[in-house]
Length: 464
Image 1 (cartoon, rainbow, N blue to C red):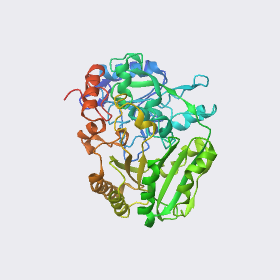
Image 2: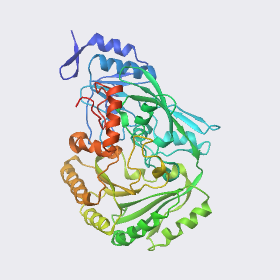
Image 3: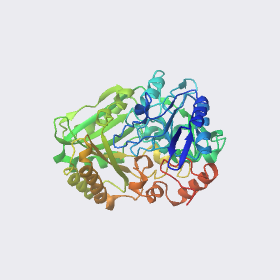
Image 4: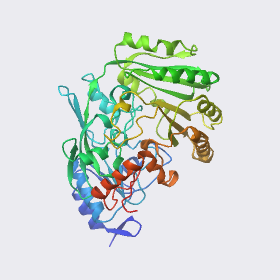
């Protein structure tokens, strides 16, 4: 009898797989099938894994059937939404990949200013639907990012100063738990679970529907000013003072980048959502400082702003990132960044400093599983390069830069920027939540996923 090896030590009879396939409205793919390689390919080309089975879910019933099948047969489970997370947990070797990317529905209620979206939606698709009504919610800084992973881990984005993180705008979720139940979680129903999914990632189940609060977002004042890297010390000193008085309507970041003509630069990138004349006044000091060698700030559609950094994060490249929240943006902090940026092996790599503040810092510390709301800045060390043969040198640069930045780190980390646990270490997951919240999340995990079926994530392990 033909058998199918699903994971080490587990063999599935052909008729067992066929019976599972018959329960799905979507396709079930195996190695060699048309579409298999495309379905297992993630944005980060460093990740190259081969699941035994890929369930391309067409709806909630497929998700439930896939979860029940995986649990019954003790299969390793990976869950794919947008497939954009740098850690690559959306795919696995030898197990079952539950692929949510075909689930693309977005329903906007312009009267209530809410939207309900399925987990395969990426932010470009979500914004396309909501902007038809002049509405949006906080949604990342790269439009190819999936709504699911970003929201479940917190959700830093261009509207966060004004409206908080993506998870702060979540009104409810529908979630399939490890026992195959579909639950609703909101402030009124299963509020403990609702607390956990707002920052706790995919630990508690597979979210099949996200309901968001939307806000009026029309034309924004956005873009970037660019300075030579030789002026970085003065530019970031100015930026430090500028962000201390920035209004909620302004979200910004600073970045060490390489310009298209190969010059190392420091850029200040902004999004102001409010009356344009008021925004011009607020941004005038930032645009006048230096002065910059280039000023690309102007009125633009919100969707154009969301796409502004996309070219710097193309699919198909090697990606290795490390991150930490910063205590401040002191002169010494900046000096180390300047030093290490000069040593990067790949022109595509970058250092990104995200200003938090605003509405993010005013949400109650215990309101969501996301924590570290009062960190003023987040540092992301972005290693991006084209060729696998250069992996060692580029990974070494990211790690050395991260080590050098540790004296300036708060010790905390944004869970969505963590890499693979084997590389980062399990303690880093605790640093994403702090001791008290981690214990609360662990209790939730023991309640909703006691066998750790959903473990390919920044895992809160109930078994240790």
